[in-house]
Image 1: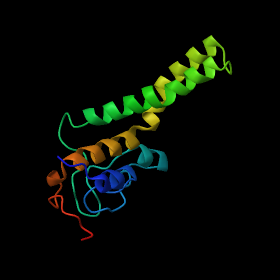
Image 2: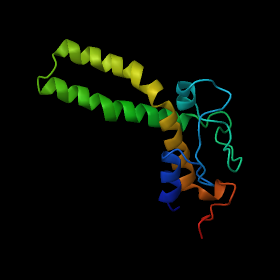
Image 3: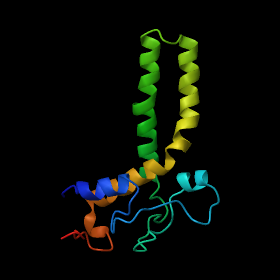
Image 4: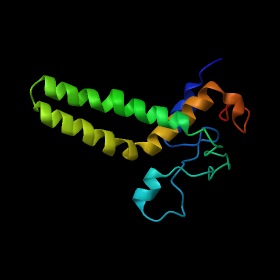
Length: 134
């Protein structure tokens, strides 16, 4: 099994992992905030399904939890350790982080998961995993 970093980076940057077209939130959702948080069901460029069947979202949950737990919360602990905030403020910041950060990074975590999945399994792409720039 080979990791295809080009597929991962395309998806992480908000592009379709197959055709590379810019993937925006669903057009039927009004407002820029809804489009920011939403990942469309299909790519507008090639029609590839981005929201797969039940259970596929679990990888996005893992990315979301990992980014929150190991990316943001250590910063709160460092701030408390250096004495920039007191213990109670560190607890408040941690609780606030747990509730505020996951919804904000939901779409990004979903893109990371799609990129991870197809980077390890490029033959699952509609193009069969062949490089489109060759």
